Length: 258
Image 1 (cartoon, rainbow, N blue to C red):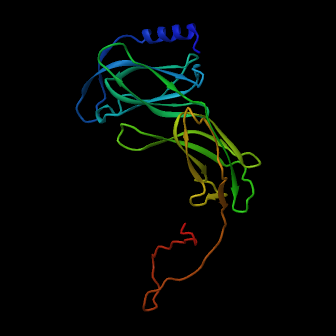
Image 2 (image 1 turned 120 degrees about the horizontal axis):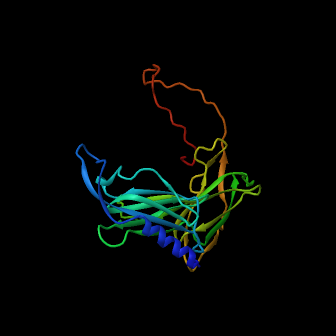
Image 3 (image 1 turned 45 degrees about the horizontal axis):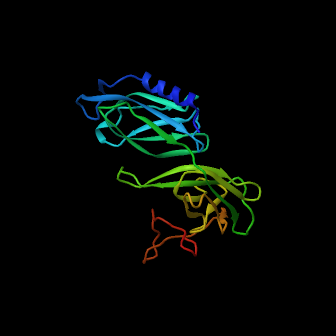
């Protein structure tokens, strides 16, 4: 529960940001556009509603003419608060990143009237997913990244998948993703850019739903990845007349089509 002191200090911080103002901001086009601006306070909390300090906070405009009007990030203080002093009126999204969690799923409106916005953003929740990663021979894979990507239904007009949390497998190949917010998540054995392993088709990702009725999921089957093999293949491409063909693109497919 939030302490009275925390609530009082948060309210004082919000009041200290001041009232609405008019200001000229850099336009998306060649002509200057006058935007009405207001302060916006972001309050980042954890699963127990306690403030999260040192989180990175960014604002993203959901209207084309607001692009570029708010730049840079803010870092939350000891009360979990980050303030943007000059935010144009309109619809915005906020992204918050902590030590091993991220939340891009909060959208809000900045109105020209009423109190300046105070937006509460939960950085993590109480959901957990546990599982294991093995190689094609059934041996545990150590040190591989496993990520949870949250599928957000957004007014932004496109599908948003954010990396909500992540972990590395231990010596036995086990991982635990904790602090998941409620919603649909894709759990992925992340081999992208990995020089040692690559994912097996349909065996390195799974869909999981976190809800109040089911906060913990233990995956029934382990993820399978394959150790990359260095091989060399030589050959020649010729046309129907037996002449060499220069610049042909060669694609190597496995028997499973990958």
